[in-house]
Amino acid sequence: MTAIDFYFDFASPYGYLASHRIDALAEAHGATVTWRPVMIGPAMEATGAKPLTATELKKAYTLIDVPRLARRWSVPLTLPARFPSATLAAGRAYYWLERSDPVMAKALARALLHRYWGEGEDIAPPEVVIDVAGGLGVDTAALGAALQDTEIKALFKTASEESMARGVFGSPWFLVDDEPFWGFDKLELLEDRLAGRF
Amino acid sequence: MTAIDFYFDFASPYGYLASHRIDALAEAHGATVTWRPVMIGPAMEATGAKPLTATELKKAYTLIDVPRLARRWSVPLTLPARFPSATLAAGRAYYWLERSDPVMAKALARALLHRYWGEGEDIAPPEVVIDVAGGLGVDTAALGAALQDTEIKALFKTASEESMARGVFGSPWFLVDDEPFWGFDKLELLEDRLAGRF
Figure 1 (cartoon, each protein chain N blue to C red):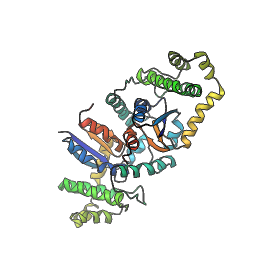
Figure 2 (cartoon, each protein chain N blue to C red):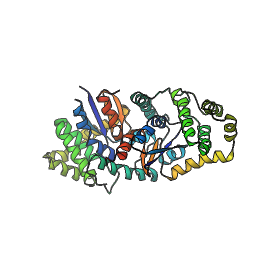
Figure 3 (tube, each protein chain N blue to C red):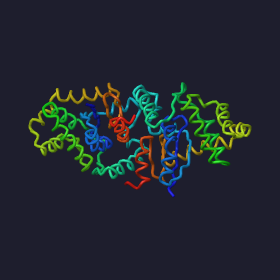
Figure 4 (cartoon, rainbow over the protein chains, first blue to last red):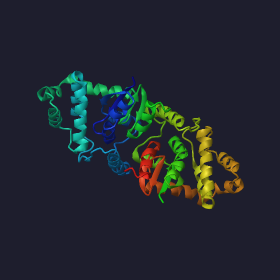
């Protein structure tokens, strides 16, 4: 069975858009998807890439491209007032939950992405992450403690470092049995690969 | 009738790949395509983007991505030993020829892209550009003189500057009635647009 690793940064609109398509696309071809939230900043810096809104040229394009892709793929979108945002609490919550319940961890990631990109609310504050998790029935007291835990903090950091070691330098990024696919716009080629078209 | 401006840098492999698809794609939807070779370097610098092979991370990805796209879309590819290459002669030849014969200018652009990306031969030397043009029946003496002409040199420079003023900062880049589409991977969305799917 084909295994897909889906890398994304919670602060990436293209990662959010991809989160709405990758599982259904994989399932249609009998592939499985493991979600891997990361901090993509260091890898972007290594390639010279600046954040989407850091330069006027790229910002203008992004503000056209992201909303039209959301329309095209029927993904709810409210551009957050705060961008980019800190994703430490979200990433740590994901990896903490994944250890005991990978399915719920994916549901939490979806809910956090929805809060930030679907509703436009900043998810940097830990209390927002805890609120979103509570809405899914997660033990919020345990989560609150986990967000302060050195071991949990290391999990997210390590996941980000490992992604860079695997060549990941953008969000979203897909590894299909180790073959890299970069960007939301790469989903068509990824599907071509799963369908054996090349 | 929908008008598409197709911006590309002769030194861009993704521009080359797009040159094999854009006209047929447009024609299927009753749109016209004007080719606009440019020097994309200054606009890339403005957004912080480095050349494809300037960093190890992006170079490794590019060396996977370009060949597989060529396979997927049946585009002949021989990675040039010299990359990136200087495109001054190619760009100047294009705009010189376009003034008298736009159809032939597009044929010349195709032939130059093929020489560089299809056969892997550097097209920086003016004599190579003249040789390619001669193979199409272009007046090589007139072209040789044009490549030294101040007015012709300005044409290519102006085209590049105008593209940046229109927000172009990557290759390939498409403006569909002023709506921007960036990258080879954007051709599916561009087709969605032409087909009225969103």
